[in-house]
Image 1: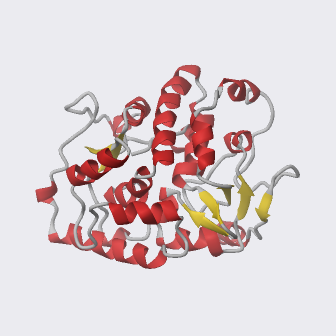
Image 2: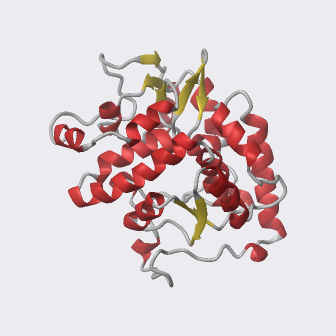
Length: 297
């Protein structure tokens, strides 16, 4: 479960929680899920699997098909891990909630994906402050079946540990946000979803690929590292890969020259469009403009 960026500081550690294990893992406790918990999973699962065909990328679709993920019950992490280990060497480990950055990065660096074990309440189907088991498992795990994404997220974990020491975590976190969480990728003439934050959201899975409001901009690493993001609403801009293999190139890149350049120069706001941007679609900005107008006194 991600705790990236000073733009999204959060976590149980901030509330004085002290884990029983140094790596913050806990038992999933699958037998303790209630019928209501499974019913919430079922409602979310059926809604998203109805929305994602034609919107999610092929790698996500293939990952879903290959996983032991049922519509009517929360998956068992040990069964997911067995399938992942055979395909990409990953496993899913349960954590009590959002964990400290260094713990999160260490798990990723060792191909362990930390997932919250709790699931949202029935009145929270459309909005949740902290990622739950549906976001973490339904949103992230299918893409971990893809070797390219598996390599990229491990490299991100390794890079995160280094970025912490260098004091540049905020810039690196933006890469994770605009790829793993809210990334889009070209497939033929279309733009498809691969980011977990979009794939697990009924509203954003439509907004990200069909609305005329957001910008869709070709992915450029330094541009992304200079760009703030929204944690409280739909994104104002999405960055689009030409193909998933771009992530493999990112996994092998030396970030130090980028960190040096980022010490100077501008930081861009989420809705900015630059003259140098490879714009795929320039958004109207209508959605966020309307929200700001409604919030004005």
